[in-house]
Amino acid sequence: MKLVRYGSSGREKPGLIDGEGRLRDLSVAIEDIGPATLSPQGLNSLRSIAPESLPRVKGRPRLGPPVAGISKIVGVGLNYRDHAKEAGLALPQEPILFMKATTSLGGPDDPILLPSGSAKTDWEVELALVIGTTARRVPVARALEHVAGYCIANDVSEREWQLERGSQWDKGKGCDSFGPLGPWLVTADEVADPQALRLWLELNGERMQDGSTADMVFGCAELVSVTSAYMTLLPGDVIITGTPAGVGLGRRPQRFLRPGDRLRLGIDGLGVQEQQVTAG
Ligand code: ZN
Image (cartoon, rainbow, N blue to C red; front, side, top):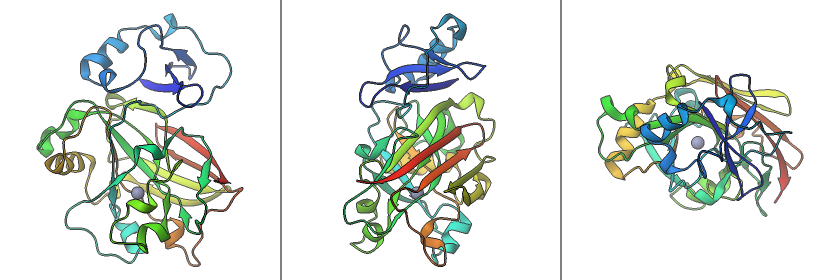
């Protein structure tokens, strides 16, 4: 299933994309797509509904993040070999984790707001996984059983605030609008191999990132397992799994976002995001 939330910010309704790519209203069946929806039972009860029995939604409403009630977003640093190389940093021996504020979340096509005083705002296309059942110290072999589905994230990052103002990255990761998520939550049964997905990003039509999740240093199962050893993952929690090479920080000369820039990013089977950059 491809699950979505549509409508104005903070007032989104649940929906799904049917086999013909049309948006259907799910609000007859559930109030919202949130932690309670994401359990195997919750998803199975949605699967039992024939999409054609649901009302079609007219027009092209705004999409919000495909999941409500996210308690935390865990980021993973330097998790692609080519990206660690462009950043001039050694490959990590164990996943580098950081927290991204949930207030940074936005819809897949919402504008990116450059914060006042920002000079180095950058892009990062990433595979996001969404937790479906509580995960606490889970072994690698069982880790993916806790994943409800996958979606695209743009881990927008202010590099000066991330790297030049103290020892943690969080200052540059959590600004409002820095966490576009979606367009859909694609349930895990429809993603045959999360380690074989092409992911790409274009700035003003020029391809900047073009990688494969096969190049991750630590795969999705390992990331869920390791993270769950340090903190309890709740249904709805999101892990953004790192970005391949091609970010603005790694270019020579470096290139950062300016008002008017347009980003397009996608992952095989998970759709496309499009964002306009504006002064915040
Ligand atoms: Zn990232």
